[in-house]
Structure formats: C-alpha cells, structure tokens
Image (cartoon, rainbow, N blue to C red; front, top):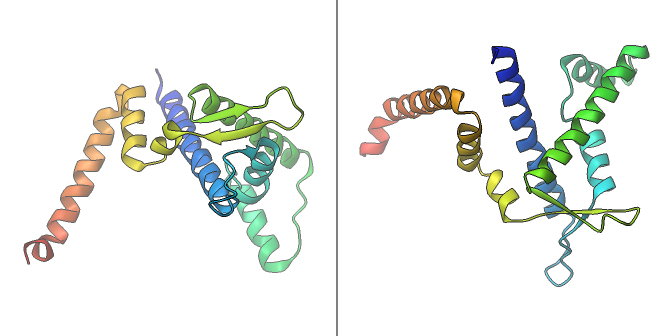
Length: 169
C-alpha cells in the first residue's frame, strides 16, 4: 500500500472523528431540558450544519476566501473550480455520514419518511474520546500503530521531562 493511500485513509478517520464530534455538539446544543430531551436530530439539519457552519473538509483556498470575506465583506468569485470543490466536499460529507452509519457510530431511524432522524449511541460517544479514537485507528490501520505509539511516547516523555519538578513537588 502506498503512502498516499495510507495518508488518505488516516485523513478519512480523522474526518469521521470530527463528524461525530460535530454531531455530539449539535445534539447537545439542541437537546433542551431534561424533561423534553429528544434523542434524535434531523439528518438534513445535521448535514446543513456540517456543510454550512463547520466547514468540514474545506481546503486552504476556501479557508482563505472565507477569511477575506470576513475581513473585507467582499466575496472572492469562485467560478467553475469553486463549484467543483464544493461538490467534492458535499460528496465527502455524505460518504462520511454513510461510513458512520455503517460503523454504527450514527444510527438512522425513520428512513421511510422524507425527514430521517439520526442519533448517536454509546459506540459513537466512545469513539469521540481521544484514547478510544487512537485505539480504533491502531486496530484498523495496524501499519501505523508503531508511528502512533512513537508519537504518543515522545509527547509523554517530553511532558514528563518538562514538568518533572512540578510532578515531584
């Protein structure tokens, strides 16, 4: 397997992680009071939230165009290439939602109606915890397990050396 494919698969898992985090945050924000807690979120509402508010999967050009617009209130025209990037981003997000449903991080209910609902159960909530995410990545991509272990060990060792005096005290 080439390095490019490995990096693409790792990027996919990181984007899946962020998709589940965005769902959890949106779900928590619109949950309401305890008495009126609703376990489901409209699928279309979630997709609009990810596409229009969170900018998941945006490339550097789109980020700079958005910053220019925020600073100057002048929108940079995109033309045909911008539309193509937007379509690719939209397909990527729909594919991520399907992958999350396949892995059962997000569960779709009421699929026969025109307005399906999504919910997250304990598997999805466990997945967005950092250590669980890293272990899922290590299990799925065993070829990068050593790299992840090296990075975590080096970060932990560096923090231990830097804060050794505070830990002892």
